[in-house]
Image (cartoon, rainbow, N blue to C red; front, side, top):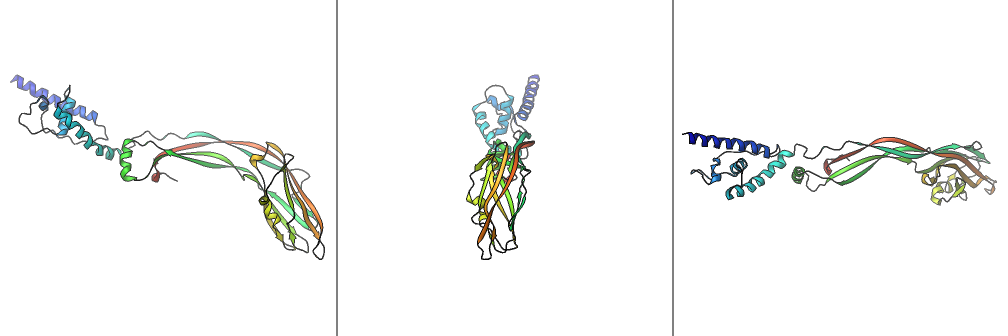
Length: 309
């Protein structure tokens, strides 16, 4: 009687241990319904006439009993793992299996912002003969921009399983958005307002437009001042046009910039013949000033269809 009680107690203890070990072995994402159909004694080759043990029973008993399980138990274990895989993907889908997204990283934004000041002898409004020209320079400013970089991400095993059904054909990516400064406009931009006080039509054709940067002539292109050479202003009329100078990348840290309009027709006779041409000149002093600010670099990863644009 004592031997039977001891055996029964050991058997129950083994069952209890197997339950505990199985709980530890199966993480929260792996949820299995365990049904105890047979005693653990089948591992010793004694089934006591009971039915064939289930795979889950074999796994539990194998965990409870030390040593190498029988052939019958070993064959059952892979079956448990295969059946468990869908449960793993389904339950882990609602939780973040990977590491939390990295915190925003502080980055420094820097740009060289040109500051223009007209020289004392320069008049922005100049009237010569019957043609008045007013010059206005668009100020430079450092504008905050975002640079976006996309590269393949590292999804967790659960995310890969779930993504095959919920995001077919999509990539799992890591997107990094980094702020930076950009100088706007990227090159010298001048607005000219032409007032024609002649009795004849004013034509910009034949005028030569030239820039100097730090005492050196800048080689501009015809399209940079095409609006001026193509302009036609009727008598007593006005026209506003734009011309473009050197880019900021071509400017030294400081110096002078000159704009010259050569051979502008300022006077004609009654027959419309040109009787006078004059030159217009503007001089500016400029300094490239460093502007710095801090911004936050943001990283996020996920399926392409879920990420904000």
